[in-house]
Amino acid sequence: MPATRHFDAIIIGAGAAGMFCAALAGQGGRRILLIDHSPEPGRKILISGGGRCNFTNIGASAANFLSANPHFAKSALGRFTPADFIALVDRHRIAWHEKTLGQLFCDGSSKQIVAMLLDECAEGGVETAFGQAATVDHRDGHFHASFGQSEAKAPALVLASGGLSIPKLGATSFAYDVARRFGHKIVEPRPALVPLTLPEGQALFKSLSGVSANVIASTGKGKFREAALFTHRGLSGPAILQASSYWRHGEPVAVDFLPDQAAGWLRQAKREEPRISLRRALGRCLPDRLAETLGDQLNLSGELANIPDKALEGAERRLGDWHFIPNGSEGFAKAEVTIGGISTAELSSQTMQSKRVPGLYAIGEAVDVTGWLGGYNFQWAWASAHAAAQAIAAGDR
Image 1 (cartoon, one colour):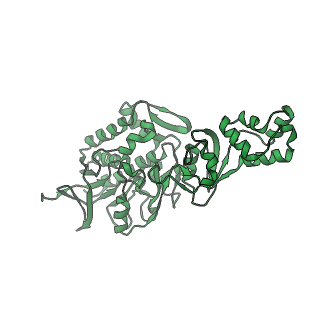
Image 2: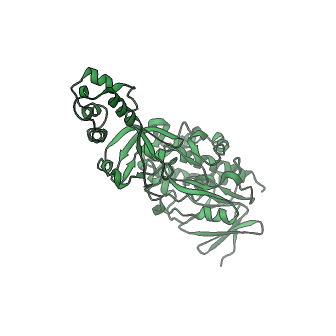
Image 3: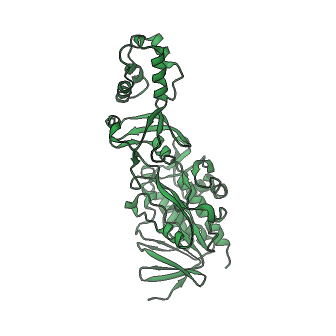
């Protein structure tokens, strides 16, 4: 066995958080080793944003994140902002554009972000070991990593291997397992930003597969106005993905199908065009197939003139608060991120370092901080990586 090599920090996980942390700590004068069991770094970056990487959101703040401690993310997010990452992207001359709701995407390809991070790592003299699974332990004041035929040790270890979402890209429980071994609690990991499935009793809506509409979807404390999409298994689209992070099994998801319609709009339609049907009135606001299905479910046939005002008011109320009871989600296989993870209770919000084990850090998706859809989770990756890298760079030489 070759001699054990010494580094200032070992980072496990070459995703967004791990690569950025490695680059910053390396550029801060530290000798860094970045390990990942995948031969290809940044695999989730590559598929993000439809291949264009929604790399941040200009409105990102702690209010856009879920955590058992809703204040935990404030420090890191406040010290490394979307503007800071945009400046890096601009320095690498990567063209970008803003879509809706502050979401920023590459004009070209997600590959540009991965290449940028690898270039930044190279600038910091980061050593990499890709395609090699690591095992770690802690003794004599150092973290020891075994990978392939190699051994390394360092006074700092950064868990940046992410959560459980998208296992086909290599997601594992590595970070949770190591954290548990060092006495850290894990907040129950669940799929987040994930399509929800409907039971057979609501098969009628599955027949609308491919139909989408702009709605307000809400469950728990989450309420989002974006597009909802019916699928052959249930509900998807941005509004549903957002709501899914707040959804718990057995709870309803309420959908307002007509958020732009003022109260009394059906009675007004009745006065102005008494001879049209409810289905036709809905068809002026919604896709035809959806209007037809909702109209059938409301069971109000004939002309509006022949439907009592009270019945129309009842229809409006139901259209504005239509309850679906999902029987589950499409799971980690389709979840964009994992909610839950390493508890923030024993991590420093300033440095992301363990309060239990000096030198142990956790960043990115491995931590119980989960962002909304739209670039927020990348911003958490950059900000938490920056916080840890600053602490590592400032540590004892």
